[in-house]
Length: 258
Image (cartoon, rainbow, N blue to C red; front, side):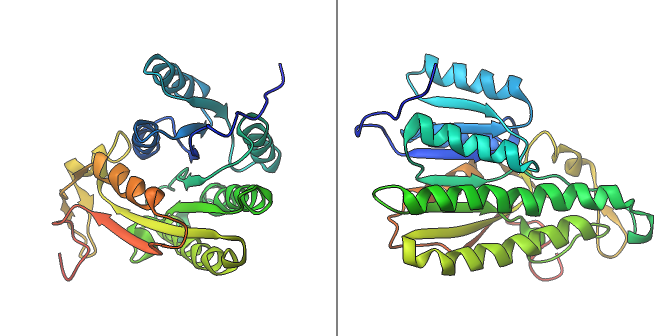
């Protein structure tokens, strides 16, 4: 059956990539609780469908669309589905991302570098491109793109060259989109996240390599605080922007000497 755009009473529409777990899932749930209709994108269908079903049971609107952000055809199909179902898009949280093995650069296989670049840079580009095009042609025109930058967009961790390079690239894209979107009422923000406790980051509670070569545990924060930060930016009118925000565990070793 072909999707048809919902009537004008439809709530604001949001897209979250990497929505199946961790930060993405927390943000998707927060936006659902705020009354958004949320499109859930990610490579694994099962967790997306579980969240869609839970939202439906709670009287909320969610649409699970399994998507590989590295694949232009998959991303194009995602935005076609959004436009067909809802007719517009108001907010995107570009969250999908991966890391590489913690090794010196001479030991890093080229395919691992390419995996990070394809997901963290090209994936963000493809989703931003799809969102920008839809937001530009919809009526009323405009929308908001929020990129997950990570504090690695500011400073590196030891043995994190591919991830750090990718997040510095995302910061450049964020600023470029914030500039280029002005003509079309499209704004772009970046949220740099430090030590949100998720399934993937739980290992950091057992010790992380520091710049001086030691291994130390680091303070963590509840992922709900990241979701609150995204909610805050998503609620803003389009004549206001938070270009870059850092949300971090306050005692983590980022500021000063740790």
